[in-house]
Length: 249
Image (cartoon, rainbow, N blue to C red; front, side, top):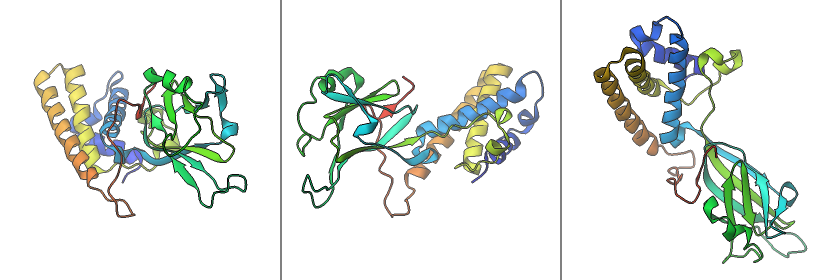
């Protein structure tokens, strides 16, 4: 794996003459397209994103909503992909539990908000684990958390790199998940944009786009078979229409 600086240098080397082109805005155009290529790879390949992220909440972190039928909290992470959402009920003297009990609320589209905002009066149970939806940096859930419960949101997120020209020293040497195979793919992504946007060469641009898409598919299948340290294959689920992709709005 390479630092962000090393990765940019590797892509520039593979660009050959395009990697050293000079002129008004060309270097910045190249750096921005390298960044865009990495973003595109992360969109299609979960293993290149930051993984195993979690944000947890107790009742004091959330605000009542809809006259106590639901509650609202902050989750302002653009392009997060949820891997799990869990409510944990912790053993206390009052509830008499001997071990924690876990519930998995159903995730709804924001279009179904009223199923949550107007229907949170039923206590949480095995048959009713709760409901949740996300919108504009917030989430709304029901029923409201009890004192002995926590809500944990597990997710992956695309790593937020900057174009190299905008990086400070620390950002240039940050370790990435990107190696030579990713550099080769991104170099064809950048060539596609050079030929399309600067050279007006449709044949060369289409050829490089096809090569990039082929390399991206190969990387996807390569990482899909990667086994984690526990010995199990990644369980990240495909995106659904019920909210498992959180975008900018």
